[in-house]
Amino acid sequence: MKTYDVCIVGGGSTFTLGFLKSFVRLRDEFPLRRLVLFDIDGERQEPIGKYGEILFKERFPELDFSYTTDVEEAYKGMDFVFMQMRAGGLPMREKDEKIPLSMGKIGQETCGAGGMAYGLRSCVDMVKAVHDIRTYAPMAWILNYSNPAAIVAECLRREFPDDKRILNICDQPENVVRSASRLLGCDWEDLDPVYFGLNHYGWFTHMYDVHTGEDLLPKIKRLTAERGFLPQDAEQRDQSWLDTYGMVQTIMADFPDYLPNTYDQYYLYPDYKAAHLDPNYTRANEVMDGREKRVFAECSEVIAAGKLGDKFHAISDAHAEMMIKVAEAIAYNKNDRHIIIVENNGAIANLQDDAMVEVVCELGINGPRPMRVGNIPQFYYGLLAQQVSSEKLLVDAYYEHSYQKALMALTLNRLVNDAKKARQILDALIEANKGMWPELK
Ligand code: NAD
Ligand code: G6P
Ligand code: MN
Image (cartoon, rainbow, N blue to C red):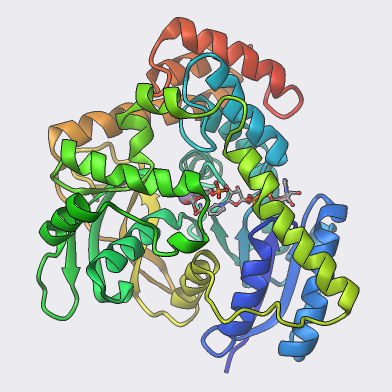
């Protein structure tokens, strides 16, 4: 049986432990030969690397595992590169969220002005990283989920137009499917969704029962109205995520056509959300006080004990598992269905061809084959065409170092929507991102 060499870029990420455990759990489905963690911050990565050494010694001793800050060591000979970098780290996420909020606009990791600030930083770092990968691993499949995936995808489309082995993927559509399965009381893999949108801005038009073919969307609508909407793993979630999923009930009451992606809340209720986010304690603070502390505390405990103890949980990590299954689909030419960000080219018939859209794809050894959804109704078209324009202008700003294009991008974003506000926020973001953004003139 063929075995695979995988590198994870952003080895120091709070999501890496989930991957290390999932690679052990899924070793029969996706057999690894070698796993290398890469990070530009060796100190942050080290405890996770040491945890990995202990985990694999106990659970997967034949795996060749290492961690490094050297690009050649990281990328050479790789079959798959998983990318989960956070350009600027969590402290910059905090600024992305707090600067717009201090000016009355939503501050969010990937949406609105904050997402655009993160987008420009990610363009800089992702372009460099993908060139490095291609120097040492010209044929590796690059599975990117570094955010903001919509902007990164648009930038990589332009930078590497002929490279068919770069995929951008997000777990949120699958998370919504999983949530629907909790509501319906079925297995999430028994649901066959039809979905369209941009990354973090989409809708499910149908949710078929794979066994009977029945469209369960009317039932999901009724149950959501009666009981609300929860993440599948609600018991492990922070309050802010429960609030986010809870908004699905509101969205479906106002726009009952489809089941929304949870991120739609920001675009549909920008004033309400801006008024209800705490400008002094945002999601970045919650992550730094919560997940980040928990992950590094788990590492310290295991490293001090020199053994895993009870730290290997049987519960699955949905995010890591999804990304590994994407690699599996390619490796084994499975042609199973995944929701992936691809160049439109008619998948959404009335949206421009060169938009990066998120739709259901069959995925196999030659990459994703998108499933068409036809024309989308005027309301959804209007929302998406505006956001595509905003994201494209931002990537123009990156390539042209253009202040004007960045101003247009922010003005066109529904979460900003006002040129004077856009200028004020942009000026503050330029200050905060010195050295991490291209210099806008
Ligand atoms: P984190 O800050 O804990 O981890 C990111 C790691 O990336 C850090 O160790 C950092 O040193 C490293 N890094 C930063 N710049 C780098 C570079 N240029 N090259 C290599 N490594 C670099 O952040 P996190 O909360 O764990 O999130 C990691 C990333 O994964 C973020 O981009 C996040 O948005 C993304 N993510 C995406 C999805 C999705 O579905 N699309 C889901 C989960 C996480
Ligand atoms: C979901 C989204 C990711 C996003 C993450 C943020 O998984 O799909 O794109 O990065 O949530 O989660 P956090 O817990 O860091 O706020
Ligand atoms: Mn996402």
